[in-house]
Length: 386
Ligand code: NAD
Image 1 (tube, rainbow, N blue to C red):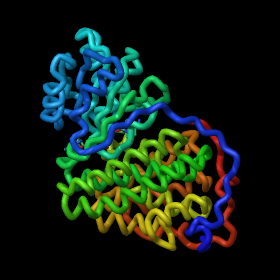
Image 2 (cartoon, protein in one colour; image 1 turned 180 degrees about the vertical axis):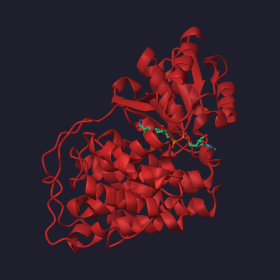
Image 3 (cartoon, rainbow, N blue to C red; image 1 turned 135 degrees about the horizontal axis):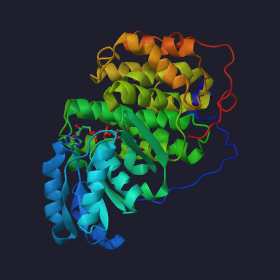
Image 4 (cartoon, protein in one colour; image 1 turned 60 degrees about the horizontal axis):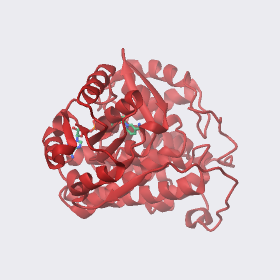
């Protein structure tokens, strides 16, 4: 990586196609108070409020503030949207005569709202309380018999998003850290995505910068609303970058680890990210330079992320998350069978090295060693849709 890369002085703009997703955002402390106005604006009069069981109290206060605009509350959202939960929330929405859903919570609540939108065409308004970024994408997921099916559909993209940092003050610091690193992972893969554009890359770089600044503030004081504000802003941008691009090895590997072994979603992202980035960074020099700028380092961004995760108290190995090392080969096989692209093409052997290192927390990954002449970002990719 040269100094010119780090400062951006050598930037050139290649040809690209960019499709903006329609989205409306209200951002600010106390902005959940404008939810009713937002529903009015969208022409919604009877919404079902959805949240996770742990956020029932926030869901209840939102439903009660909505008054006659709310037809009820379902506090049953869980990670990865099991089909039976989507069935039950969808039936409740239909029988209550709802004309839309309001999700209050993280990716689990938003995922449930997306499932109802997918099946019943009901618009979603999202009030996110983590940094996972699902509110900015048209990606849905549904899980049955241990297998998660995903797809993209414009109708699941929330019509409006209300970002209220005050609602995130109660998010435990540990979850805030892993959720923030989960958001950074979206930006990392957006920066080296085959369909990255200058617009998505701007959002990704700024999102990483905002989160890298905000997370230490939140670790020092989880009630710091300015830190929460900045993290939510970063999560928004990273989610929007994810929504505008296709994902690569990191997301594929984390989806398999989460789906097959039931490892925790954001904790898995936190552990795996530095390893996949170390594997890729010499093959994605433009993305690496943007990440170095965002993280304020002149050297390897993967190395900085590995240290940052430790400074913030995030989990440091897949072993710590409870993964049995005998599952490494199974995971490697499943990931290599999936049609995801990656800047640095991988084999079963190289992926086994990577997963083994992430399992033990060993650092650095040997791919961090400098390479003589890295291929440009666009040359070494398999360009595959998802
Ligand atoms: P989550 O929604 O399950 O929330 C994580 C934990 O934080 C939960 O225990 C929840 O109860 C708690 N929590 C949330 N808000 C809180 C608050 N304000 N105060 C206290 N506790 C709070 O997890 P997540 O990481 O936000 O989302 C993960 C899910 O989202 C996964 O299913 C993942 O696949 C999906 N996801 C989808 C997309 C997409 O584009 N479709 C993007 C990112 C994540």
